[in-house]
Length: 393
Image 1 (spheres, rainbow, N blue to C red):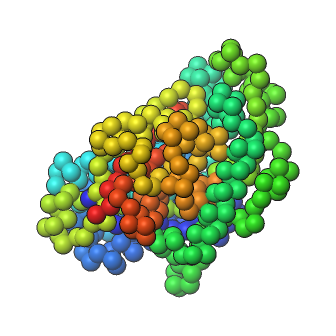
Image 2: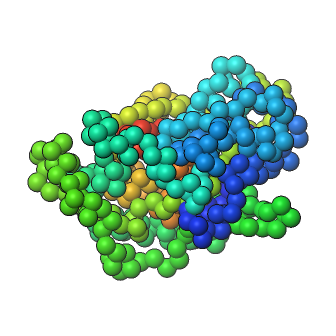
Image 3: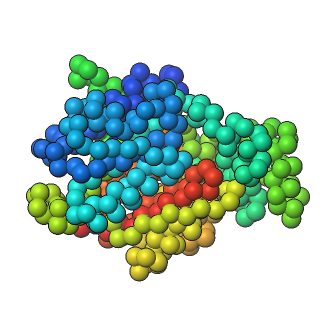
């Protein structure tokens, strides 16, 4: 059972972003304090905790999830770990803690954090991207080039990508104005002053004309050997279409999220009122590209005994516009039910937290609409992917 799902606003993932002065442990720890305020004594009832974080160095090193609990003065007896399944980390944490709560009839905590303004992407210098020998031997491709590959393979044009990006931005702007992001918890400083209470990354007034002026982000990388490498891997291709740019790709962001979980018996025993029930979860992996969310979703739906047509609402992280459009087409999804309040192209992508954020965003909208079934899904580097099927209760 999903008892609670909360998140911070997303800040711009750059030194000038509103959250750049906030330590990762304090951003996540602030949510821990909110959870304790909403559910008195919950810190003494949580059996285990798991958090996603992709770039686990510097501020985000040394098991940042556990340190955040300590920083928030939770009992030393609460176990915690931090995991890295690339962009799928936060949702994987939710799925694993849901399974653990179910098996052991306990209360668990999941979530994630990423401060891209303070700990930039790739700053861990992992072998998959920093070591050319390793990267080549494992078939590693830069995520942006992989997204352009998907566009080329599936005839998804730049116009298609830009149209989706405009839709995402306009929906996010409308949702922010209407106050539809109910799960947001404002970030405050030590004096109680609000630092940020709304997503900072949304850009107002975006149009296709504006996006058409942006240069392709990965064409230069392609000309320096990236395209040749892809055509070596996929000899049926004679070119790579570079359709992605800063306006139709997920924005780097800062943010954190928490999801409180319990078995049905544990929820009843502790007087906790659930918002939703996790019906099924799945993990998947594909090679080269970030299209694995299709496979993970199909597996999760099969386990839940549902079809795409049964799903009232979809919350899916944009791993570049073409990858998202491929997901929509592969599963036959109506865009009226898909990322209805915007997506990471507009909202930003704090890598380790985004997956957990999807749960709160989805439940917020399901409650407003009276929806029954929802799917959250996310894919990431190395082809990893995670999906979760939720029923509102």
